[in-house]
Length: 199
Image (cartoon, rainbow, N blue to C red; front, side, top):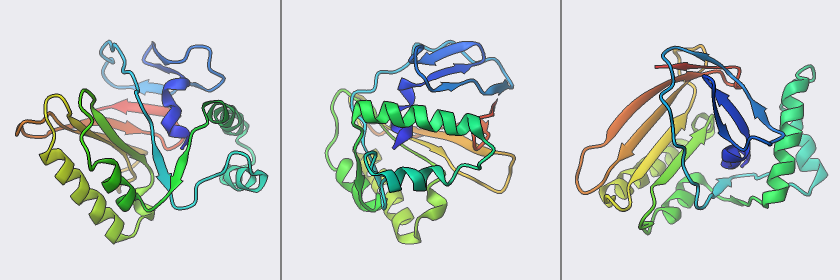
């Protein structure tokens, strides 16, 4: 669930600052490609996530298991993880234990008027069974058909493909009221945040 707090990290992209400037989590990936257009940012109203085996922030064994996925010589990544965990504890982020397909269906069952809901995932789909992937796709299509100008829907994805290096960052946006979906190929990014290449 640490990616649920991306707005609480200090991120610099192509000379532009995003997120929380005083954050202990500092991300400064190398920017490649066309200049990044100026951005006014977004306001996150609510955040929610799920995992089949969520990490409990107050259970030492869970934290040890999480840290075991970082290579021992990658001190910068370990420092960022420690800082991100401290932020997550401060925000008391809750990640529900659930299958992603079932969880998403419940989350999108009722429109959120006045808000654009963004469904996003990073390097997760490859670990999901086919039934879960199908349920997610069906849920997104059903929610998209109910989208309106006051309650649009977006699907932001960072998932591995066979075209490396890195993985594609894609966005599908449903503006609602019967308008066609808008697909954006945002670019590609390094799996560990070292670079981002604009499309």
